[in-house]
Length: 580
Image (cartoon, rainbow, N blue to C red; front, side, top):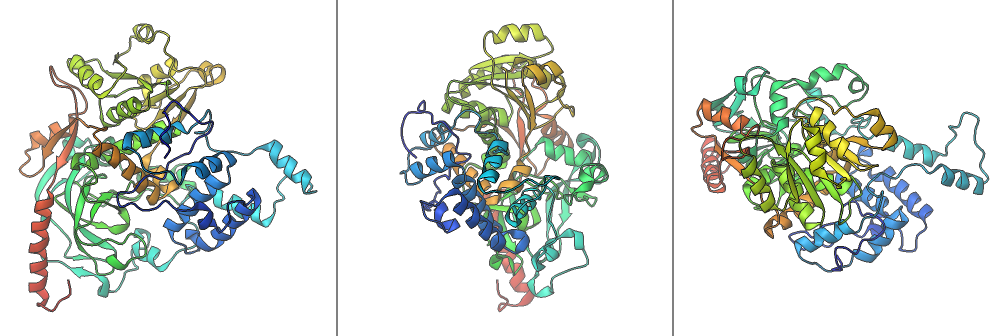
């Protein structure tokens, strides 16, 4: 990346910089990926992408990682402005983590965060130039246009028509199809300490600590045994305990797609997000084309929108390798890895919405929780003012002091006194509102936005969507958006997610991203301590701000110890000649 000043802002956006990797991997050459030279026309780029899609699309048996790279290459090279930025920056040398992040963000312009859509004028001009005619029905398309339209409309609809043998073996939809025992890895009798539930309901009432939770007697095809290190207590964790989301499968639009929520067999272990170390694998896992893992790999639970939770609130967990993302060992402190989805959510909210530039203003509620803390620190690096709303409770002054130390521009009480709220804002009119609460809290923020501002929901702690006045929608052009990290990963691929984690890891290692969380060890946890960990993020007490709890499940040293004991047990089961 170039090292020019942050305030030197180009006219267009680069959606996500290809970050420096910890092992000095060279960035991919988008021209080489598509097989075109640097002077290729837009039509040549489009034709090359179509040819690559016929060969590498996952629905045709292609490698998802290759397909993700091809999509990024086409998205960049098909846009003249993005292509110009890529041609100028892809060979730049490395700079400091904060400068790299700021420079990547600075290469943005007005409106560039929005997806490129259809230009009717351009399409009509192209049709006229080629001597084409418009059919009366308006649906005559070339084969290439039809194929592109089909691919575009598969997004978010689930797997379509083409399945590999590995898909069938790994899919829970086809429970009667199993791999042969030759790929399984038998295990000795193992048990773990886990946070479990026997029925859906209020988390504080249905969750309990099971100190002798039995694990399966083998690792089936594609499975690994993970020694969990830590897991953050998030709103999604609590939602999946409280409600079986499979009820949505019967209602539109969910009943019209193949993306169904998987049922959670009860009793179950809670937990959708966490970090751990692999200590055993099924025999086929290290050689898999997709999601290969080896013993002692560090892994995160992959954000999943529809699959049932992996159950990571346990000292050990058996997980399908396709639900894991390998990360460099100690990419960042364990508590940061446990909260990595919050860090990534903050990154994406600022990157993808509001067309933000240095000197702009954002407003957010629940600013004292991990997403809000990360937003504050990223805004400080990017020279963006942040207005931060926090609970009007006994710990307000302590919370304000903490957020100001992180870099908050303004910290205000979040309450129903709209008049005082507007007076406190003065002339500040934020371009972006980040809503974690929904309901009336989100509605208050919408009133504060400048004309054309965006309100983005990334969590709904109240369970209600903000009710925005029609006058704001029609005359102020305020727009309402929803963001979900699992959906983003589905659309952009695991490799893009890993790139983002590497970039965030660089910022953490440089001391630019701190997190205030509360640790809650699971071993020896009493029911009262569990209830406190589940509710610590809801309201602060006198002299103590509220905090997200991070369940402490193990350590790297303990993982190594368990690994050696496990290998000794396996050898004793099958003799010294049994392969490890």
